[in-house]
Amino acid sequence: MRKSTLWTILGVVAAIVIAWIVVNILFSLIAFVFRLVVVAVVAVVVFVILRAVFARRDVD
Image (cartoon, rainbow, N blue to C red; front, side, top):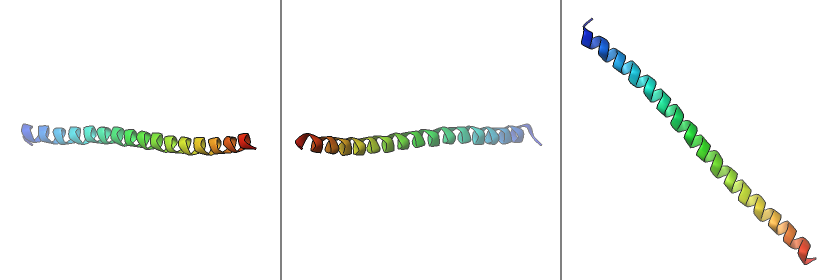
């Protein structure tokens, strides 16, 4: 096996490992942002419900 072939194989393996790590970080970041959006939506819904419940009590 020639030296350039060995370096090519090592380069491909390194590229796969680096790509795996980058994709893993990206998916973790996307999952975090998605959770943040879901928490924000649920918080707004709960806030509106609580505000409506307490607003009715003040009118009576």
